[in-house]
Image (cartoon, rainbow, N blue to C red; front, side, top):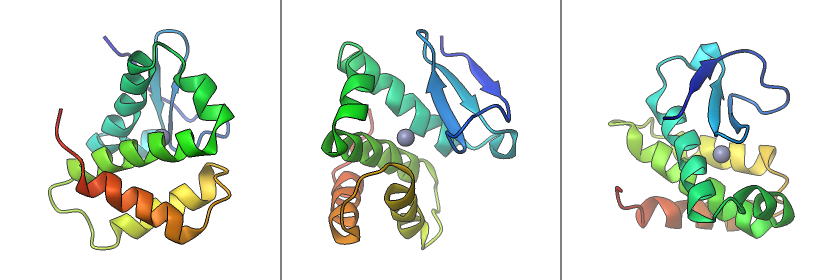
Length: 123
Ligand SMILES: [Zn+2]
């Protein structure tokens, strides 16, 4: 069972983070009740299990992997909202461009995100 903690103690992690050996989720109190953000972080936990705990290593090693992992998480988050704001995709692309050190063009990041959104299938 994933433990969920609401805290402002997120260091430089932004709004939420998965941490520790048991994959607890920390979310900023401003996002209390944000189902999409919870789904985003749960996706990273799924990625840990799916990769036999190599996710963190690959995440920091490879910008390509980071792009793929974050696009999957943002796509699942996107599909969580019944009526996503019309500009939510661009907001998520802004996050992808600004927060993950991808060093890629916006067109490349947008393409990867849109592919993840359109190919998303619920678990
Ligand atoms: Zn993420």
